[in-house]
Every structure is written in structure tokens, then in C-alpha cells.
Length: 245
Ligand SMILES: N[C@@H](CCC(=O)N[C@@H](CS)C(=O)NCC(=O)O)C(=O)O
Image (cartoon, rainbow, N blue to C red; front, top):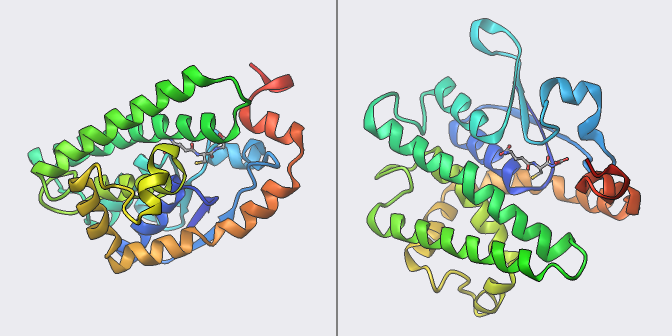
């Protein structure tokens, strides 16, 4: 059995989608990041970077219990455990890992910063909003070019590179100001047709639908956690105010 520690976020939905894709049973545990659960000593012992998602596999290598943190590492671990969604060797494997790294190094951090500056930062951060909007649009262009030339991000076959990237595209279509107008017309990705085609194809997978439903089960917990958080809790979450380092 695999235990998934998470919240309602695209980084966690990657993992519920992956577990559905490979058919491994799992249990979900909510981490209240607004109450500081991610800094509990017990949680830090399995997630030293104080972030979700984390999994604990009670049937790891040699039958040992193994915690794995960082969503990219979790996807690689689950792919290797099951022999699915990551070629075992060769250029095909390298290509999948390249596009997985694009998600981990560019899509996640840049998209996440834009969420922060458009939703949570105090007013007066025009430079940051502009900087991250521009960077996100550049990355959309990179994905568009890739998906114009390849059916999936990691090559012809669906892989962990797609599993990692799709939940972020899903989330940002719902919340980015520069996508909202097209989203209101029902076609948020009109400007990026190859990305839109890929998005719809991945969305049509039954495992993706189940993974999204399960990932979204954390939403009610997060809405309650968010509602109960006071200004001090947000300062701790965002490492600002008296929590500035
Ligand atoms: N690179 C990490 C990013 C994970 C991440 O940013 N998790 C956020 C939620 S989406 C989190 O746990 N934030 C709590 C915190 O930073 O204190 C991954 O891909 O797993």
C-alpha cells in the first residue's frame, strides 16, 4: 500500500494520476500547510524540503518501507517500480527525463510564482507579475513547439513527462488572468493549438479522470484550512513578516 501525503495542488494531482495509471492502491492523507503541518518533525523526516507531495511505500525495494519526496522523483520511482510510463533505457528514456525536468525546473517554479504574485502577494508587484507572466508565456511557447512536433512531451508515447505537466496546465487555465478571457469562451488554449490538442487527449484518459477526482478530494480540507488561517499563518506559509529568513 502507498500512503500519499498532500493537499489540493497540481504537484499532488500528478501523483494521484500516476497511481491510477499504474494501478497501485493508495491512501490519501491531508497535510495542512496553512497550519504549518509541513514543519512537524515527523513530516520533515520524510520530506526534508517541507513540501507535499510525499509518498510512503510499505513495499519498497527488498520489502522495506520507503518514503519518497519531490514529485519528479516519486514519478520516476513509481514508473520503475511498475515498469510503466518510462522507457527502461536508451534515448527514449533520456527524452522523457528531459521533458520531466522541464516540468520540475521551469513549469512548476515559474507557474507557481505567477500564482503567488497574482493571488497572494500584496499590491505593488507589477514587475514580478510581468516577469512571471512573460516567463509562463515563453514556456507555453516551448510546450507548443514540442507538441506540434511530437504526440506527447516525452516522444510518441504517453509518459511521466505528460503526467507531470498536465495538472499544471489544468490549474493555470482556471486562474491566470491572461487565459481567463479565452477560458470564458471555452477555449483557454486557443493561442496554443498543439498544447490544446494534447491537453484534451490526456484529459480523456480514464486514469487521469480518476486521479483528478481523488486529488481534488483534498480541496474541502484546504478550503477549511485556508478559511481558518490567520495573517500569522499566511506569513509562516509564505516565509515573510517575522518568518522572513
Ligand atoms: N518541487 C516540489 C514542489 C512541491 C511544492 O511546491 N509543494 C507545495 C504545495 S504545491 C508545498 O508543499 N508547499 C508548502 C511549503 O512550501 O511550505 C515537487 O515537485 O514536489
